[in-house]
Amino acid sequence: MTFSIVATDGTDVGIAVASKFVSVGAIVPHLEAGVGAVATQCYANPRLGKIILELLRQGRGAGEALETALAQDPGREQRQIGVVDIRGGARGYTGRECPEYAGQVVGSGYVALGNILAGPEVVEAMARAFEAQRGELVDKLLAALEAGDRAGGDRRGRQSAALVALRPGGGYLGLTDVYVDIRVDDHPDPVAEVRRIFKIWELALLRREDPKDVVEKKAVAAEVQEALRRLGLYRGEVTGVWDDATERAFREWAGRENFENKIRDDDKIWGTVYRYLKEAASRR
Image (tube, rainbow, N blue to C red; front, side):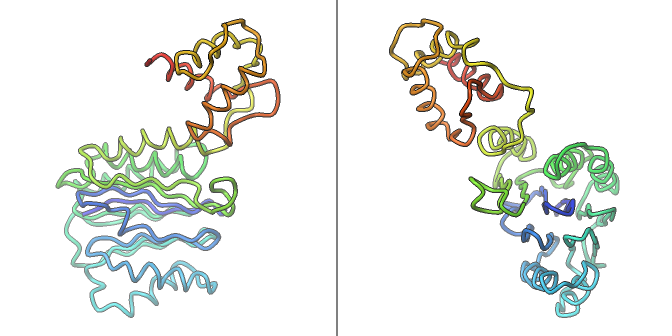
């Protein structure tokens, strides 16, 4: 009743998943930074995720950890599990009682798997998209999820989706390992909704802008002042000079939008932030 991909690039670990099932992100993903990731689905037994992560933490490989955990589960023929370890080992399992179509594709550092699918083309499309997509692991996971959805996904329909990626110290202000964690629990087009939210998450929280995508404050001072006036944060004249009042208003706006980690301490603004400000002002 679910399709997912579990993967690692040797630094990040992540899972992308979608299903005609409410809050699939609460059941399928199990991850630990620097250790590995596990997807538990079909008639999911989330306890297996915890067991497998503990075995990976002990240094077991993906295959050994999966086999050891399954040996403890009398309902294993109804389970579907994908496992990757941080070294890139990958293993998938589909029990004989998982509803058709059920299967997996295992590649270098990833497992694409699913059950009650439109057909094998779903996991095959996910694998192709994952391998073809450039960028970080989270980009590859999202591309794979979208490819599986386009290929037919869960043949019963759509309801929920999730995208999770962990990186040691890669989370908010470097204080957590949560690089991306997005859940859409009930939505008519959950994969598209994950993509929409990811764009906001990326803008607000991820520090991965193109170094060339910047604008000089002095070149856009008038536009920024006008935008901040529309938003009620700048009360001075539109002078085209980036002064202290403009800087204060800009930082206040950035704080309201949770862009505090995107404030630069030089004479430039990230292009992504500048364009978002103009768009926000245009809606007023």
